[in-house]
Length: 367
Image (tube, rainbow, N blue to C red; front, top):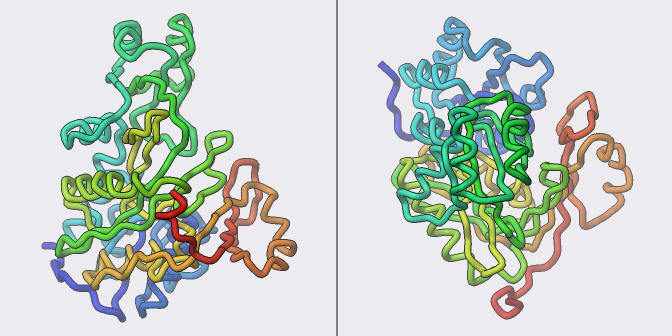
């Protein structure tokens, strides 16, 4: 039987599935609250392991290693949503896993995400499921051109998707993805992408951070501006979308909802991440409680902290060799540098980020 302790007090052991930079920043936030963190991942050189109390290097399919890991921690969470479902289920039989299986299952499947939004009355782009090439032509008749085709699983940072500009492109675009179960979506003529990051506690309390604007390049998030300029009227609706999703999933912890703002000023649901999120890194310096501390508070059954922003912020990802400019960044008194300890600055790889801060403006007047 799993241990069902609701509150996991400081001094306990937090297990994290995944060893990347999100796990690293979670581990640092947990340590500040008095928790020891145990990282579980298959990589030998993991950024999160460098700042954790313990590291198990093993496959997510290794039941013996997973059983030892479960026995060594008091609660388990994850830094990425593509944890194998069987792994999460195995652990949940032995130790609390937060967020739970429902949130994980929905976030792993782009079709299930969109179907959830529709059930909740949240607007999305028009979409259809694609199981094979025969679904492409009728699907395009429904969603129109241009369109996007996305693999239902394992897509991130622009991967696992392709644009279909003409009906004659459809078969080739689908084949480039490997012809997996997919979702076909109408192209959205949006003016910007926004994200809202919110947390839900064990007792159902929900708090949200400021709505942020995200700017991408080559499918990778480059900058996040918080709060999003000229978006005060959207903050309430975005928060309600996050609340509806959190409650529907019975989610405990941080959840990010990515949204499109259309030219008509409407919000369209894009996707969710049931974890701390790149677009929330600005909260470390700018808010009373960062997204990382908030997640640890939530999964451990502690009171949620205030998400209030004390400063305006802009976060820039350092990709590839950009992190080699650390000396210049450190000379900027308004910049907060985070390097992830990765040893190989490959093209497209996030090596760190920098957050720049400004005094808080009255955004209600500015908008």
